[in-house]
Amino acid sequence: MSISTVDVPDRLSARDRTTITVLLVSAFVVILNETIMNVALPRLMHEFQVSPSAIQWLATAFMLTMSVVIPATGYLLTRFPIRTVFVLAMALFSVGTLLAGVAPGFEVLLVARVVQASGTAIMMPLLMTTILDLVPSHRRGAVMGNVSIVISVAPAIGPTLSGVILHSLSWRFMFLFVLPIAVAALILGSRLLPTDSKRSSSKFSIPSVLISIPAFGGLVYGLSGIGSPDAATKQIAIIALVVSLVSLAGFVLLQLRLQRKDAALLDMRPFLHRQFTLALALMVMAMVALFGVIILLPMYLQNVRGLDVLSTGLLMLPGGLLMGLLAPWVGKLFDKVGARPLLMPGGLLLSAILFGYTQLNENTSLVVIIGLHLLMSIALAFIFTPAFTAGLNPLPHSLHSHGSAVLSTLQQLGGAAGTALLVGVMSAGTIAAAAAGKNEIAAQTSGFSNGFLVAAFVSLGIVVIAAFMGKDAAVAGSPVPAKESVAVH
Image 1: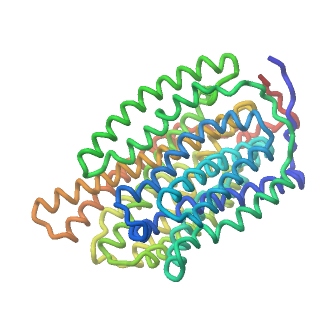
Image 2: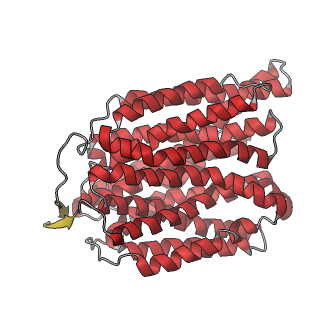
Image 3: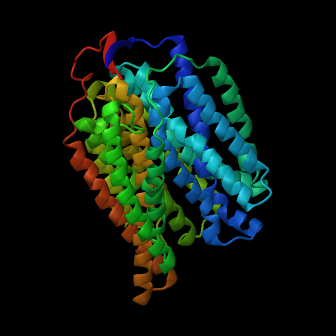
């Protein structure tokens, strides 16, 4: 083991600011694409003449690919320069986007989504790792606030943008609209991003990749299908979950053995940092609540209130924009006061809003719904930036890439779990209410209420975990060294 020093300047250079800006814009584009497809599924089902279960694979395959590729980014980011990893990510995304835009049939479009997802999976860990490497810890909150803009505004704009496109144009323009921006980012990044050589020379662990496919892919697939009303689908999902848990245990044991030789695909040592583990648990709970609401609220607006896709997207847009506007301010506030003073009120407000959602019915004013959604966006703004900044801050330089990959992986799994859990609860509640004699609208309202209630109880866990979050080192007044000594393996 050799020791080297990594420069951590107090102020960002022009080159570092350019690097982060290019990565932020690129991440925004790829995450925008992640949600732009969902609104188009009914039209694609009709155009390609495929079943609902088949068309869902356009979303499911995307999540599965993300869950399998993200763990490998920990290795990529320690092995190759920023520019090389960026070009790989954006080239994959651009090729997938072009292929999707000209796809002659469903099968080609499905392959295109997998290629897109491969590039998307690399971008967020690349962005967060680069910020951790370049930005001193006492300023990361402000910069991570910009990451929250990417995470919150892009998913909010996605359904609205796709609704506008589908209202007037072919579904192909969802991809053709994004393609030139992606290509421009690829060209710009390939010229401006640094090519500094990385430190690791470890070999790529093929057994780790092979076991990660059923471990993470099986978990996302199982969670996605566990709430299905179809008995056969649910049985397959349960089998997938069992296989996943066994594979996941094998994956962790293999990584623990490999990391002794610094050859792990995904290093487990970030979990030795208490703050990281607490923040990770908190983020999973937040993602369960968020993704559940992202699914349930549009379904309520369309199925109970009778709004069309475009109106639904426009109604939810202000909340996403508000979260994005607040994120940089919350990040700066984190740099001053730390995580706990932001997470506690954020968690309490989120729980209160989710309990408020349980009272929605067919006569609830749209103004009230927009107001609740805006308040929920404020709560989430107080949760996301402090949570992942406080979690990643304590990690040494050598674990930045692996910590970012772990965080991104658990975000995907939390979203899949939230969707499966709350949609399953909602469906069961609707069936039970219909069996009790309620009419269709009343039964659906009851089901949505049950789903929001579970999300509210999950969000209370955020408050509990926040109480145990320690104060950030930079906030506590410890100086940020001009040079940080890190172990280089």
